[in-house]
Image (cartoon, rainbow, N blue to C red; front, side):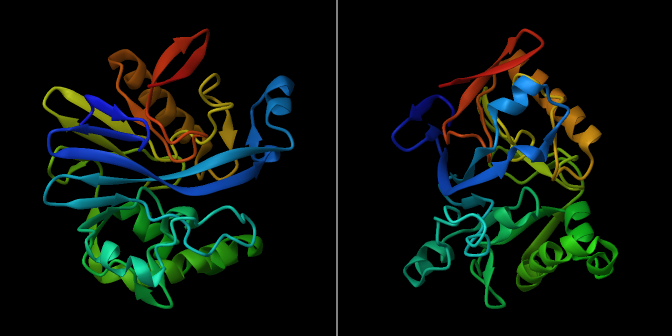
Length: 279
């Protein structure tokens, strides 16, 4: 992986490790979800900004590892252009059965909506990798009644989506090597157990940032921009800055869930922030 880039397939590959971006559509997010912004920055994304909805398939030769499962059919009422992967479709039964592992970067509905349907797992043969802190937080029965009333439908949906896959879990605590050059990186802030992925082959590497960055229009140039769905905004900024520094210093190719492109790129320092340079 990571030596060659097939732009037609948004794919990085080397040896037996190949990563292919799988788009699940897009979501239009209100500008009001961002804070700690200048008026110029606010105007740049007003009234809304478009998020990509990228997932990835990592193939090792013996394993097919899905990174997040998209939103399924569960967000279409609010975001009509989401859920385009249609994992729930009957014609994808064999494709789903071939998935050996699923890494859930975090348990927001746009990342786990494709895991289950009608109370059953859509990926019955997959081992599902989640941070224990993430699973424990979202599946706590007390959470449903402790959150504000307007958030209860979201929590209820997450718990309903998670329940059918409970017997497929492999819970991790912090950074974890899951084999074949794939390491889970604890990257909290967006959610309590949010994780990114580090991929390596020989002396080459890449990182899948998931939701460490959600807005390429704002957060590269100004990593301190807060997002309303971050559970701990200060920690999210700390995590983002640490990974941005690593990416730029070591010139590591990366991708992220909500970038407006599904391509890989590099980060370069620019003024007081960074700039994304697509490969």
